[in-house]
Picture 1 (cartoon, rainbow, N blue to C red):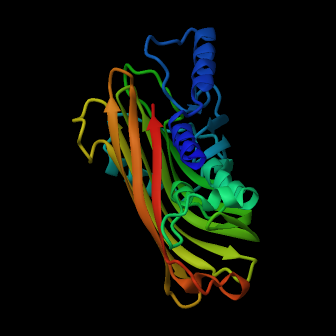
Picture 2 (cartoon, rainbow, N blue to C red):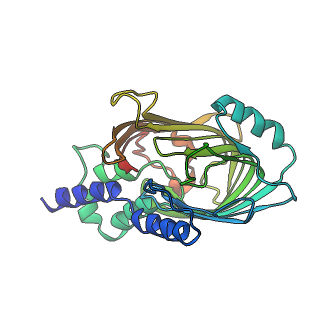
Length: 332
């Protein structure tokens, strides 16, 4: 019984994101500068007040699955271009054309709380962790909630182009930036089925990422091509491609998937022979509650891994190639 109470608490923790302190801080800043709008702040991020006044920006985001702090600063004297009413594909086109000459740099430190919870429980509460096993196989309910992250934390440096999204008549309630350029990331640990493995690893990627957050709608996207190199010889080096898109619209139909849904996929190929080593497919549905200005969210998916992804002491004789993904959450 205790394990089911704990699993329920973990799911509720996913729903209750620590955004309220940030909202109050944002409100205090706006009030002190006379910019406070009558609309409530619903963002999870904290950024600079005005790009033209302060071109170096500190941004932070708290989320049960991905929390980060980052510093954005210019490499040239150019101001960040502002885009208003531009369709999604025009944004991609402009970023692609301008990213050939990097004009901005971003330094980020990220940590992934839920995967770390899974690692800690498996390491220090083994009997409790095994209590969530289903059937005679290796399916574990805690693993389905924490799956999908191959490292517990990372530091990154990005250089490229950046645009700022604005909408006439609406207060800016998030960083509202779009990026395209080149990123280098580092971590000293690898996660294999909620087990930490010492591994100095580097990722080099070309990346397009953005977020547009306004009072009634929110759109975020990410597309990347890259390579991941492991110091640990028992983990295969890979080339990968990934795409993620997430949309929330409080004015759209409650059951609309295109306007209130998400999709996330990633393929990892062996850098040695091009063999497909890992596939990840996750789709999400959001159920907006306009009166409360939040949306319930549930992501479900599957991760497939080839046994050849690991070698030596990390190679399992009873390797389970498929892992289920289940991520409940709430979005403001």
